[in-house]
Figure 1 (cartoon, helix red, strand yellow):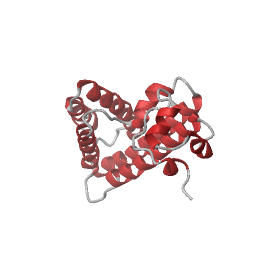
Figure 2 (cartoon, one colour; figure 1 turned 90 degrees about the horizontal axis):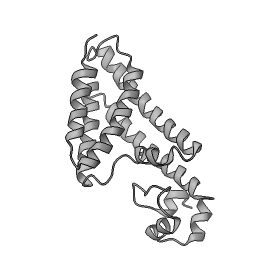
Figure 3 (tube, rainbow, N blue to C red; figure 1 turned 135 degrees about the vertical axis):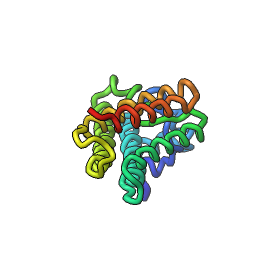
Figure 4 (cartoon, helix red, strand yellow; figure 1 turned 60 degrees about the vertical axis):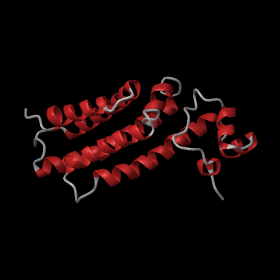
Length: 190
């Protein structure tokens, strides 16, 4: 028996629950209101399930890109940036990062959302930190670089960059991000 998001089968990424009415969500999913409450006790539970689903999808993507041992570590990060550029262009700059979008909209409204989004961003930073540690061990980046701080900075900067790219309707912010990260952060010498 399907459960939760599988049963509702919403297109991804889902609209932001805080700004989207339940009727709109149900209409888009073509399901009756009673079915929604069978799977989710509230719109909050639905929003948290959306975050969890997106987190799982992104975890697989990051594993595929950042742990690809056939590619040098810094190139893996560039591949991630390349996929981000491709995705923004593919969806005409209308979509971005669901976690970043929800974080901007909902983090101030509910601690449960805030903590869940922070946990997702932390898991992404851990994956990137592991890749950067490989880069450090292989000599691609400075041996004294604090890979944990850099990984956290990467995601903070990335989310802002995605927002800027959507506002500008351009990949230029992502190219600037790439230049700064690779020229001034990853390859910088103390």
